[in-house]
Amino acid sequence: MPAKKRCQSQAEPRCNQAVLRLVGQCPHCRMEFCGTHRMPEHHDCQNLESCRQQAFEKNKAKLESERTVASKMAMA
Image (cartoon, rainbow, N blue to C red; front, side, top):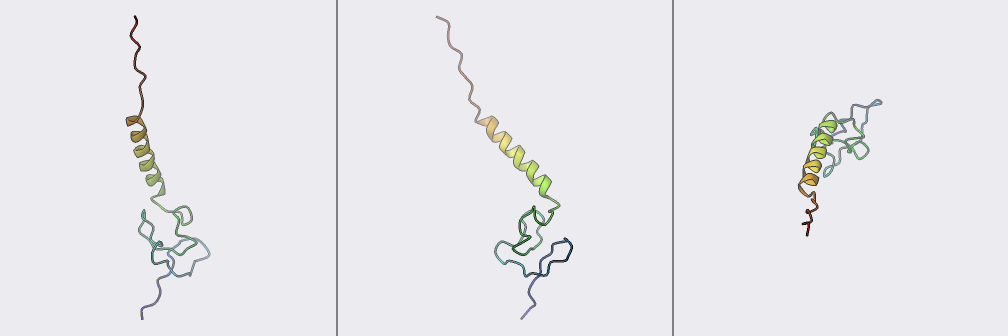
């Protein structure tokens, strides 16, 4: 049986906990982490800032496309 994969967190002291199988892989940096370090904020993800910027741009475009414009009232 192969050895269990261990957390790849770079924090000191070194984490030696087992990797979570289902939710342990970070979608941004593709590294595997334990339950404590699985969130990008907790393992100092290198791609977190670019991810936030992409989400901001996507949300901005969506909000601008849904903007309502008041119709001008015809003067009678």
